[in-house]
Image (cartoon, rainbow, N blue to C red; front, side, top):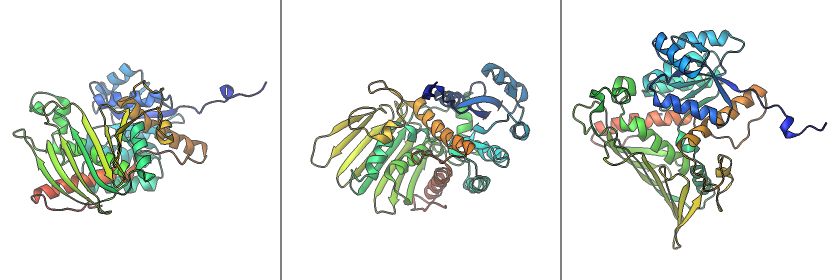
Length: 389
């Protein structure tokens, strides 16, 4: 009998563990859904809470066989098992990213970590060195870079379709922290506004890092320095809830970044505009399947995900036909899929497809350095400040 594609065995699923993300944790559920969409991963173990009983309860909810009361116990025991985890997803508050990751890195376990990389820049540098020394795959879930039309935009910039880039405008506006929810029992608001757990940046660390990463990813530019004006509009809040940042790039291009979690009426208003000498492009997360292009001196037109004019960069991270919307979960899943391809290539000892792309240590370091520079600049009345990389 002839062997067809249908008879070729697919690689065994990547055995995945998770730290954090137990009952009531929004981002943990997102990671689990994203990991399942392309059927590359199987969640087999977890330390879902620092409380052993709550961790066990979450494991039971999820049908996960192995539950641990601490991430250190999990790392040690899973590393000794023949069927132990190959990768771990870290979905804890920011201040725990580094200590958790280090336990798994030193045992050669691949890491998929929620952003930002760490709560502080010194931690980020130590973690980046440890990850580099370990030689494992380290992915950071800046999920918006997984959207097909963002990949399309990056390809157009790289191909010179926009000409020389002059201006970058990026904003990320929400309103969910317009009221003091941290004092009303909201678990997410509580840790995200606590500098001991979130880091020194509030909106800058939570969503400003996404905006900064997105602008860098698409434009391909390198930041030279920034000038930041950060505010805490809600009385008593210990971290910023709004930030305006001017950007100077090494190429001579200029940019502006606005991040806010007190912009009344805004749900998840992530928007990117880039202007070059030949054309401009515009994309917004709440309508992610469209990329608007305006050539200089010509009518504006729209590219659609999977539609005419959309290229290979978008196609390789597109799942459904044109007109069938893809969004947040699929974009997140694309980061998992790309990380999974890298992990499987390591497992099988084969060359990695050069088209595979996902955020990692470089982007993580840049994001934490961005927050650090914003805080330092704002404390000096908006003085121009370089990233301390």
